[in-house]
Length: 385
Image (cartoon, rainbow, N blue to C red; front, side, top):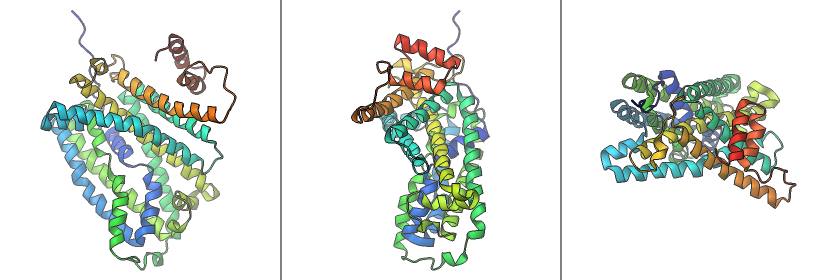
């Protein structure tokens, strides 16, 4: 009698769900958008932050309720299949995959570019860092939902801690006079700033992708979404208040406003801290969406919308390993192709390993002498991974 096919592991609890929600929504925009919104609407931009924090709850609650009612992998794909049929569901799944493959490399490049504000980096080094972030997200997800969730929890604790530190350290510098006049540019700019920061509240749908792996979806979805929306809203509003109260938004540069705030806690290292925080935030987002998109591919393949070889679950880690591997390999090839083109244009000396795939060379540098490197080297010699 053959052994039963492995299934996804039910390991998601409320704390892991909160970490995944917050990493999916709380992007690097928290460092930039409060300053940009304040430049548009002045102190009145706080109205937009409060309004969107409140309005985001019904949207988030809808996704949570649908997932709790029928916990399946795939999230929006599963919702589309149930309501509109398999054809529309396949289109949704393909669009999500296209969005991830084209958008994720750009996000990692943005993360690496933040470091250039504090450290002297060449364009090639920026692309290399972006590739390392992609590889890191792959390695974390490759080990399973438990490892991924624990890393996600650690990342979000670090992010929240640094944001709170920056806000609290800025409190003595907040001047009530900076909030008047409250409507310096009238009411219309409030709507403009709301349109700008609207995108900061998207991402709640990503957690629905792993609904099948919740231990207690009926209870944990509703509790985690309420907690997440509340904390995310308070963080956004707190950073916005600190930005306006200290008039940090008058500083030049896209990340300068938050750097001014963080300098109250870190002194002259405010810019360095902001750059590092941006990388941590974006890595958390990358890790969260790598987890989510792998389940979208898994669900689409299981229903026949993609090749069935993509619906296999690893017996040891109970994750769709071929999916995570394929998605991240695509991203690495995409990012490292840019790196390779850039290097050739600059007529740089090519490493003696040039004929090896770039993802193999990168693995050597990242994995060092670990046992993982030995497995990668064997795969490189066979031409597969």
